[in-house]
Length: 287
Image (cartoon, rainbow, N blue to C red; front, top):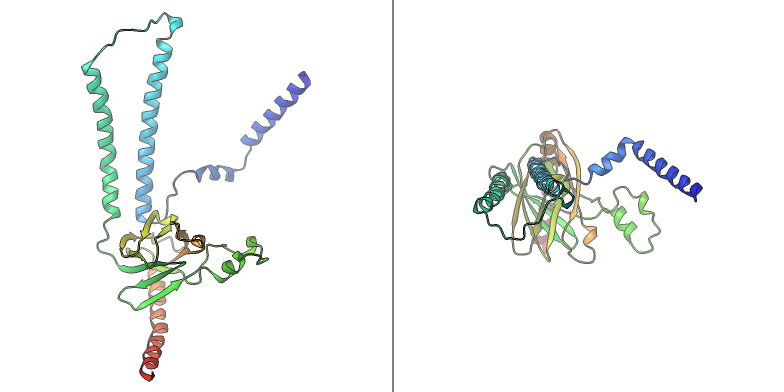
């Protein structure tokens, strides 16, 4: 029995040492429990508001539980404390414990309201894109430019997901998170998204942008993003609303380019779509 206890103690000690000697990347796993900071102006404001309210709640919790623990220790029975059986009323105490929570809620509501107003302020945008959700793809139209296209699940992911495809999904880069044509936006510009749907309710969501908006048939929801000028790259998201049996196969990929690169890309898209428009008009005239 004693030998067994020694073995158990040694195992626990080894486990504790293993935890203490864990590599640095293990801490990053715990860091993922928190809200991500994001790469847009709004995502950083939302993260700042979240952390401020979080630390206020931590302070409130320390004060409340600290007071409770102090009262339990100070007035415990072993110290001779006797419960007061009479109901004692104190108007002053009731006013204090009513005003303090009200004051805290008011202090919390002011910065929260400021961020909410900023989220809905889509004025002075540099670019407007109409986003339409379909089963199961996205359509992007750059208003005022005659540029538009559909964005669907990449062929490699679509082939691998098929029943009995025989493809090891671990060999497919960005499995179910890659598309054939990503949405392209300029870094540092305020981009307004007009979000709707053609068939059922979808939701446009990119975690790094800190925003999600429902795409509802017959309605147009609005949101805006401004990616930091020094954060070009690819950002991935998904439809966040159950929209049918293939709901998990309509990812979102946003490619953020510098302003000169975006201008060049937009000009190339306009040049490529112009012959197609001419060909369509010619075909209609012949028929």
